[in-house]
Length: 401
Ligand SMILES: *Cc1c(COP(=O)(O)O)cnc(C)c1O
Image (cartoon, rainbow, N blue to C red):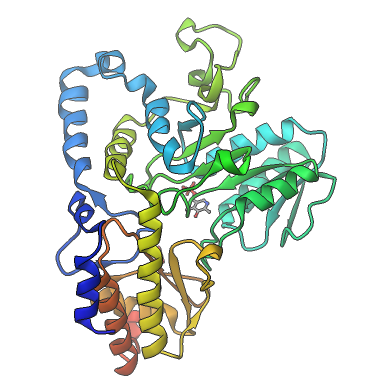
């Protein structure tokens, strides 16, 4: 492929106009939207308005006047179509880690079985939170390859797309297998939501959680979402029984009575500024066909993985090539992955590194061009050919890697 070929793909790309919805710094090729999504243009104006008008001018009256109080439900309703969720089944609250805790507690509380099963290589917070909950409840946490789900399993906690490799589970098949074993499943959609169309309802999913700051572009530390299938909503109650999850918070009653529906997953006062930022960020998906997003991500994958494969045979492609078996990131292995990534970042190509030897490149079709991924492969090849990575400065690990 040549540079001109990549530009031709951009001219034919129906999603090309959506790049204007984002603010991408000149000269930067941003391949880390799987970790922190780029800034949608709609966010700056909205947060400025929330700060100066809603908070600054209207002060506490904004809880009603600007409906701050129902932001968790409203923003949840915006996410629902992206993940194939039924109306009223998604709420935005807290962080992914906290939502894992809440939903795990719900799921184990509804079963008399003693095991929480999760996957070796799952994102650490998922495994840590399961372990933390188990210290309170006495459950066993079983960490394995999920090949077998035994009849002692209450709940399976699994991430659809693996953060290191980019490999993707078959949500429908695994959910059916868990159900056949008498277990429920919590799907972690951190690397799915906004990357491609998830079909929770179609998969018969029970529960799900996911991040607001990755493919949903809600900004650093954006609040997360939680999904509960409508059949599991009645009687929903978590041990984090905060006042805003109460049926009547402003009755200030002495006894806890959970709210109806997903409101029972709310805990405390929502972070209005960051939740408004996420709300505005989701406008970037207005009118977007997620099937087209996925198709472009696959085409970007082919260009990037193809060019890297042809130019740099020393890299091992860790991500499955088969589009049905992966998400939308490219993971490459190399013993000097960390230093190579720092050299790339110094040249304006931003991806990231994961232990021990993985470089990750996120493909986000709403703001990436074919020209970008082609150029990124060229720059990577140049970094390898010149050994530009082989400098002490690129080998010193920062606090956040
Ligand atoms: C990013 C990520 C998280 C992050 O959880 P936070 O509570 O937002 O820090 C959890 N699980 C997976 C699979 C992730 O990729």
